[in-house]
Length: 595
Image 1: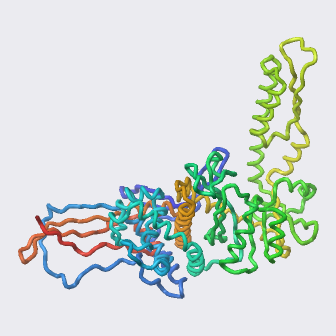
Image 2 (image 1 turned 30 degrees about the vertical axis):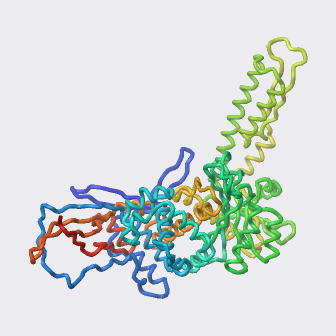
Image 3 (image 1 turned 90 degrees about the vertical axis):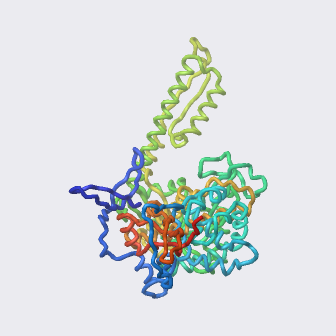
């Protein structure tokens, strides 16, 4: 879901409304539907920031942070000033709202305090915690390369005022060194975030969702031993890649991650990730939820030996072992269009859950029909080529049939094709190609479309609860989609192993900020899609109002006041719902001597 801004004029007056909109898939592509109209969001509604503040440490309000407006007034400076109104200028316009919000989230998570403790100040001109903040905030607000940060993005923002780091001090060499300094603290950061996020949002860690994705490199990456060619989720098998295993809670809050070689199979990562999580957070009886790519008898035995629990998907081929149960009538509806039924395991120590979805059935049915239609059309072309004599070589005909099976693999088993040479040809044809439909394959598809099988050693839970826990695995899938589409973790341009690992760590921190904001928005009933909110805040700027002034003493000078633009009506509504107050000025009044 995401937040959508709606403008309307009524009786000559402009009105701004907000709506929660959900994106869903159809056979004709992605569509949007309104989940709830939020209207103009009355000021009397309770703010999300106040709710969040009361949760933390039992306080009625959080300690002052960047979200609280600073006070710059100097009571000792009460000398009257005359200003020439015709000479007023606006100078040095900078992006403010989005970086102000992101830096506030950074400080809310106390990452600045943690890194200041772990990365003490040395001889460097800029503290390394500040460099880490710049890298993460850039990845959150406008993901791009370190070169773009140094040459374009940082000088366009107001971070030099907020962080006290000048534009001249931000360059690529310092940013690369910041990556090197940040990487050794990965484990400490993960442990800190687990505790901090748990305090903020009252998280539970008994159910862990684990999934693996890949991200590819631009370049050969010969100096990086982890960069290998393997199964690419990005449809880039031509590029080397690394695999990333991510563990999240049921709310999608990240708990930790590990990076693997690009050619490592998903199932071979399970033992390593379980050991890593237990090393960081202790060995307790947690429930692991994983998809069918992780399933192997070795992995399940490993979890059982550690007295661990699991809910996993199974390969599609395993569904055939339960064919007789698909025809039975004892299904239980868990939600509209979804039914489940429990089936005891053969050895009694496991339970299998059969599930079928009406929406999934329609999707798979359409896919099968499309593949069958395309296969028939290409087989007809192959048959026509043999009949007119254009296709004469039997080996070539088999090669073309093999390519068709590879391209339309979903329908390959539905056809039985015979390619044979004609003993005594009388016309142009030198071979015959005949094909028939596999009736048994069609019957199995009609029975199994929309069905899938789950496996668990939690034998005391009802199938509806088990299914609902498994379906939360989509939170891990959404985490990968956010890091790839919103935070641009791919492609990776770094070539050295440590720089690659540090790049992934920065993306992980940016994702933590993203989910923190999403949780906060959810508490304020603003949906859970931060991008719209960040884009609205990015419209808020800071700038210098330059005044040509004359004091009572007769001294003339320029007065430069660094201010924040006044938010529009819609932005004020969002600020109120989040419990935020923008500062009006960023710096005290600066006097510039007139030349």
